[in-house]
Length: 104
Image 1: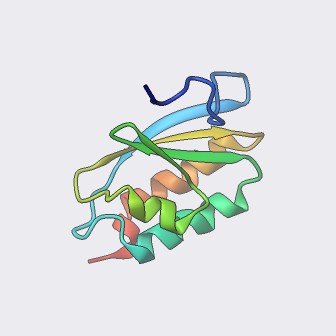
Image 2: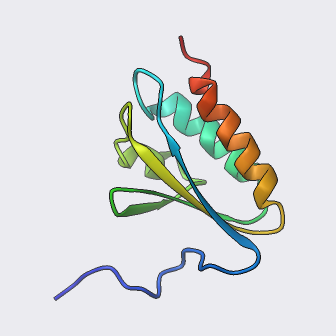
């Protein structure tokens, strides 16, 4: 029987890790442009970024991975980070979601 392993490469609860959730509020969800905006912020962050929706976890630095989550309006995305600047990453990502990816 195959399944997800508890020894994956996602962050564990350590002093330099943080998890938080954000809700997709734009009309079209996470399509190519919002995915690219998430990746742009994630790539400025030196640590690891994982994004999870409904049990599926992808690398937050991958446009294709983010698009594969099929996160439509109202979807909740859980971000997990490991690194030194977690609070700045959370602040930037929260602002991006609050601006609805600058979409009308």
